[in-house]
Amino acid sequence: MYALVDCNNFYVSCERVFRPDLNGKAVVVLSNNDGCAIARSNEAKKLGIPMGANAFEYEALFKKHHVHVFSANFALYGDMSQRVMTLLSELSQEIEVYSIDEAFLKISGLPPSNLAKHFSELQKRVYKCTGIPISIGIAPTKALAKISNKIAKKFPKETNNIYIIDDEIKRVKALKWTKIGDVWGIGNANERLLQTLGVKNAFDFTQLNDQFVKNHLTIVGLRLKQDLQGIPTLKLEDVKDKKNIATTRSFEGNITELSALEERISTFAVSCAEKLRKQNNCCTTMMVFIHTNGFRNDLPQYSKNILIKLPFASNSAIELSRFALEGLRKIFKTGFHYKKAGVIVLDLIPSEQVQFKFFDNANPRHIPLMKALDKINANFGQQKLRLASQSTGKIWRMKQEHLSPNYTTKLSDIILINV
Image (tube, rainbow, N blue to C red; front, side, top):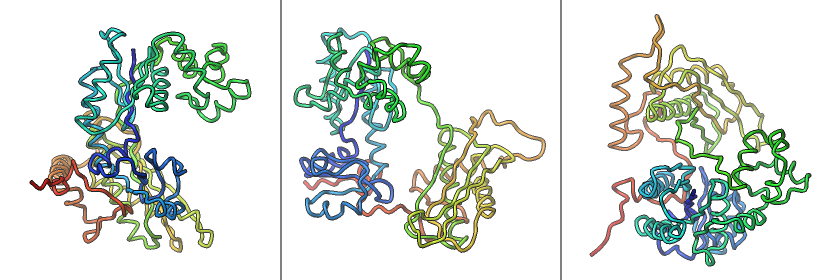
């Protein structure tokens, strides 16, 4: 059996853990730069606030209904996610962390009659230890567990946020209840194709001919069909390192000077280098891009990127910053108001597999230097030590006007209790 554990309204729940006065009230969490809604409490959903709602368009509604608005606090959410996943891993060593708030567990050795009780205890343990409410869907396959989880979340009172598909009647009923567009892995294009064939729900999809599914939805679609039929086909996946790493930002205002863009690009390259070192990788290719604000029709438009093939593999902040700045200077044009820029590192290889060349190689002295840099920044705060090419007087930050404290990751933000 497989179980999909999903944290309910995760970002909102994280904020409520440390602000219990928000329970039962409308809460919205905004994306980077406070752009749009990426999480809503059930109370906020009832007010008609959609996912992706632009914050400036709903500002009047927020004020009218006293909606509590938060900037995304990913440091807090990431730490709370790790705590939840650690508790789940105590139940099963076979776990696939699917996203920041979801995980698949493979369950073996538990009698079917004990599943509901066992997972009810897990649900209580996670809430007691973290304050995060979870919904659990249990089924013979991963795809069915996904549907089972949707049922648990859709009917919380009837299911106590736990639903088990453990017989054929429940499987068929669940498939007929699930619209084809809501099936895990069915994209918009496939949804339109299947609807033209009269496929309205997941059950209809399982009735299609195998060869037809394979021809039109590839082998991936066929595996999904078999999984929905109750044939375990989709296996748990190991956590893999990212194939590329990006650091991109929209600016609070427009930038016109090369020197200001250079500081931004250098900072982005330093961030990518740090992420590379965390997963013990080096990159051999970089992309730098800049573009203006496409919504400003009153201003001239320009966008450009450049792909840079590095002479050697590296994860040094010094070297990656230098290459990124060289690329920026080749694509920068004066006379434009730049709104966004970014650095993407590609063609990643494990650090221990880097092959040395006769002439151009990374500076070996950078390896201990970067270790010292990471250690100091980890102990005393990010960007305490920076390159000279980065701003010495200002730390660039996203627009986060409603940011909550880092209750679990910053000593100065720990909640104090007055006795």
